[in-house]
Length: 41
Image 1 (cartoon, rainbow, N blue to C red):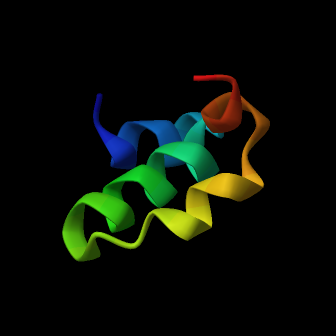
Image 2: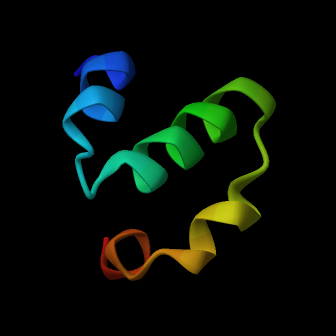
Image 3: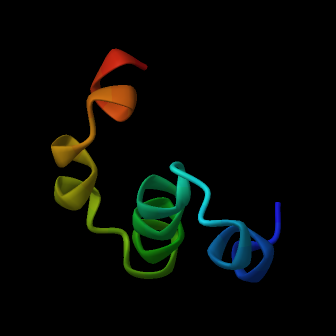
């Protein structure tokens, strides 16, 4: 999935996917707790 394409298309998953990308970069998983989709996993 390309984040730039999602930004252009105003995809509702964009915030979650950006948070996942930041988490993969810095290892801080706490930001993901704000997303119900993540908690459901």
